[in-house]
Image 1 (tube, rainbow, N blue to C red):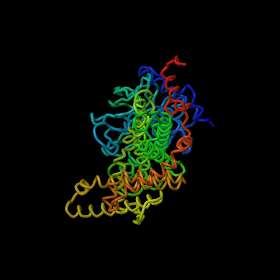
Image 2: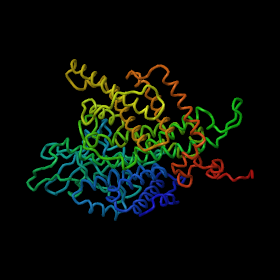
Image 3: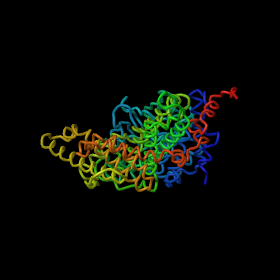
Image 4: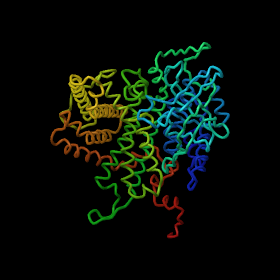
Length: 571
C-alpha cells in the first residue's frame, strides 16, 4: 500500500511560486492525478474510512488547494458514481483512462439553501434514449464549482431535478464529461475569479439543452420503462433528495479529518515560532513571546482545541447513525443527524484556532509564508461548503426541539470547576436548560401564530445557540473519552466557558466569580504545560519537511532567509 506521507512529501507535490493561473491549474491537476494513480481504486478508498481520513489530513497539511480538489474528486464526484450508478465500474474505468478529475455541480447561484430547491432540469427524450440538461434561468446557474475545462479533463457530477411526465421526480446525479474536445454542445462555462490562498479554477456553468447518454444517469434503482412509466423505490422526491445527498457522509468524515490536521499544523507552527520569536521591551527585557501569559494561554488553549477535534475526527468514532427527524432548512440532517454536526463543530473550532494562531504570529504570518493564510482560507470556506454550518445547526435544533432522535443530558452542574469532567457536566446542564427554554418559547409562540415560520423566526438565534452548545458538548465528551492530558482538557473546557458565557447566563449557570476562578485554574494548568509545549506539538507530527513553512522550523530565521533566497552574507 502506498505510503501517502512519503508520496506527498516529494517535490512533485510542491506548489511552485510565480505560476500564471492557467499554469498553476495544469500543475495542480497533474498533482491530483499523481495522487489518484498512487491511491488506486476510488471504491476501495471510499470503503476504507481510516485511509480516507489519512489522505484528507495529509493533503490538507501539504496544500489546502490540493485537498479541496481531492475532496471534490473522491468524496463527492466519484462517491456519487460509486453509490448511485447502475454500473459504476464502466464510468470509473473511463475516468481513469482519460486521466480525468472530478468536479461537482450542485450549488446554484440564485437562492440560499439551493440544495433543497435545485432548479436545473433533466428531461428524458424517449426518441433518442438521452437525457437533456437545461438551466431554466439565471438563478439555476451552477456556481461556485471547479469545472474549468482548460486545466485537465474533468468529469462533472451534476445535480439536477428530473422532470418526467410533467412531474417532479426528485434530484438525481448525472455525469458529464468535460475537457479538451469533450465539452458537450450547449455547455456554457465562464471562469469567475482566481483566489490567492485557496486557488481554484472557479467557474459558473449553465446548460443549454445539453444532451447526455442514458448511462450518465445515476439512477440508483429508479427507472423509466419502455412505456415511459417512471418508478423509484424511494417513493417520493423528498426521499430521493435525501438519498442523493448521501455523499455527505464521506464528505463530512473527510472535512473533519482535514480541518483537524490543519488545526494541529497551525497550532504547532504558532507554538514553535513563539518559542523562538524574541521580543524586547522595558517591562520584560529580552525573552520569547511565549513567556507572556496572554500569549501562552491562548496558544496552549489552541493546542488543546486542536487535540479535541483530532479526537472527534477519529474514523473509528465517526459512525453513521440512522437518520431521524426533520431536515427542514437543509437536506443534511435527513442523511445523518450527527456527522454533519461533527463537521460543523470541527470547522468552527479549526477556524478559531487558525485565526488566533495567525494573529499570534504577527506580520510574518500574513505575507512571508503562505500556509497560515492558506489554512485559514480552507477552514473559512468549509463553514459554508460541505453543508452550511448555520443550516446544520438550525436543523439539529429543530430535531432537538421535537425530541426526534435526541434525549437531553442531565442537569447536574458541578459545585465548583476543578477538572475537565466538571466543565463537561456544566456543558450538559447548560444544554439541558437551553433545550427546555427553546421548547417552552416555541410552545408559547405556537399559541399565538398559526404558521411554523413565524413561530420559529424569533427563535432562530436561540436554536442556533442550543445546537452549538450541543455540538460543543459532544466534542468535549469525545475529547475526554480519548484520554488527553488533564490540563489540556481543562484548557479546552475553560475556552468553551469563555465563549459560552452568555449561554451560561441565559441558563442560570454563570454566577459571580466564575470567570475569575477559571482564570486561576487556567493559569495553573498553563504553568504545568508550558515547559512541555514543544513536546505537546511534536506529538502532532507536524514537521518542516512536510508542511514547508518556516514557521514550523526549529530555526525559523534560517528557514525564512532560505525561502526568500537571501544568501547568508553576514556569516
